[in-house]
Image (tube, rainbow, N blue to C red; front, side, top):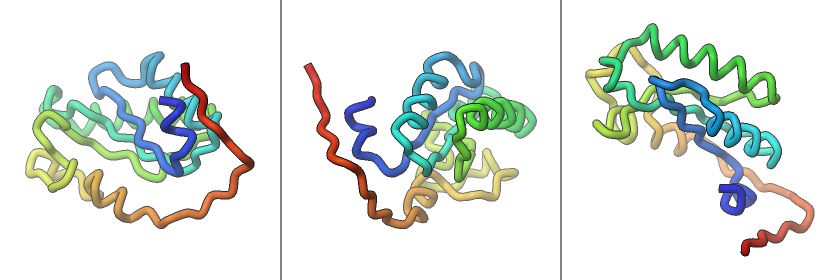
Length: 126
């Protein structure tokens, strides 16, 4: 994850709606913060497993915001998705009729290109 992220200017943090922010999500978020990536989108996934419950989404969103703010990450967007069913990845869905925001693709398309000026960085693996 880190090698690819060193070249990124935006990140999508995927959070399981059933489990919420767990240790691996915290680690990924911390690496995003450490790498200085400011444009963060949080996708709360597996909404199909909770019958697209808005209250559960809001509870996970609140917990995610609490943790992310503790490591100085202010997400641009937090949106519900179901990757398995395809809800709000590319197209809107009747299953999430209560959510009026954009899909993942629309969200990514809305990000403006950013010219990054970093000191020299070289990814090293192995």
